[in-house]
Length: 71
Image 1: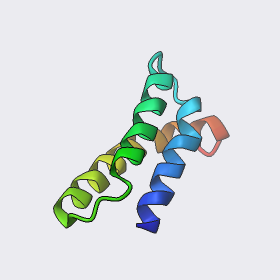
Image 2: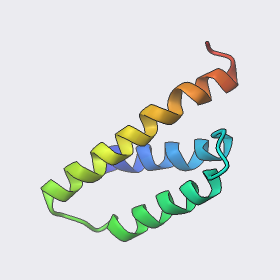
Image 3: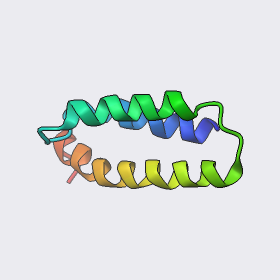
Image 4: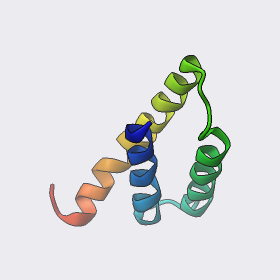
């Protein structure tokens, strides 16, 4: 659970820098998704949530690195 929490924190921290018109909506959706599923114990659902969070992190991470000047 702590790794999922760290991934959600990463998304919440870096979404405001994401160059998209819908970034505010995405931020709200990430927060709502976390709150709705934070007490989930079903391993299959947790695996699904983790893959969704990983996909979001994978798409945001390169942009954040470019903004910071790492590329």
